[in-house]
Image (cartoon, rainbow, N blue to C red; front, side, top):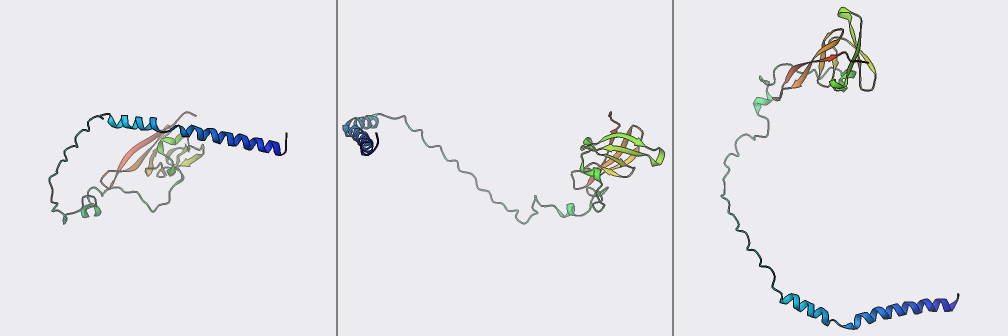
Length: 177
């Protein structure tokens, strides 16, 4: 069925729903008022007393003219025993293997013999590099000091905790292929 009758039946159904909804609201509010009165008449749990506020002893800080403990002292800024010793050469160009951690590099072989011996080092990407004595590898300024058939030895520069540097020996052994 279409036309005006279908339209009027939809309107009639809507008006009937509205009338039913309004009829439910006319019952009154006496039961709600009774419930509110009962809840107000009930005794609640006792409220605990407020905590005692502690008063703190005042403190007068009189050391404003002293050195700030969080800024470096003049002794730390000047060369001293803690800052003396080896230092990395920040002006030299970085070598390709210095961007890798030492434990991620693998020795895969050697070429030559004697003073002209080269070592083959494999980086994490699988690229093999030829390196010589006195070249740098690793992220701690590691300088190769000795090349042997089965290992290389190097000296790294690591911070000593006092603003200076200290030398630490390390080695990489020939690994399995």
